[in-house]
Amino acid sequence: MPVENIEGWDGRTNAGEPVGAADLKGEPRQFQSISDVADRAADAVSRVTDRAAETYQTVRTRAQALGDQIDPFVQEKPYAALGIAALAGLVLGSLLFGHRREVIYVKPRGPANRT
Image 1 (cartoon, rainbow, N blue to C red):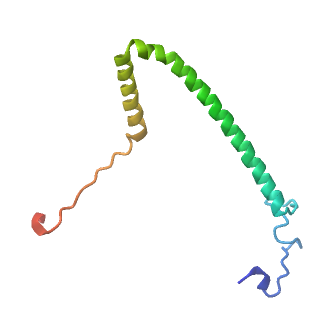
Image 2 (cartoon, one colour):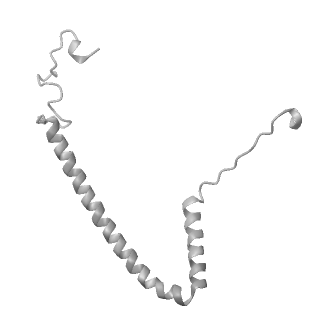
């Protein structure tokens, strides 16, 4: 049943304000048009996009600098670098996925294994 069809209700709260006219703090709230809300959302998306681009650029610059520092070591001692990378991958993998140990029991089909 739509709210407008409730008999005897004029769409106002007990305080006489239209429904939706007050926020959770009880202060009057200005009604905004959809275009105002869309503009605010577009501004927020623009700010987040700009921040993400800055963060990406910072991370990329740091990764490039780290790569430039590591490159001479890899050129001089490739097997040691390979071992370090493998060990780092093993440690990282066990830290990220080590807690997901699941045991799956397969129930045999048919009456052959019943006790």
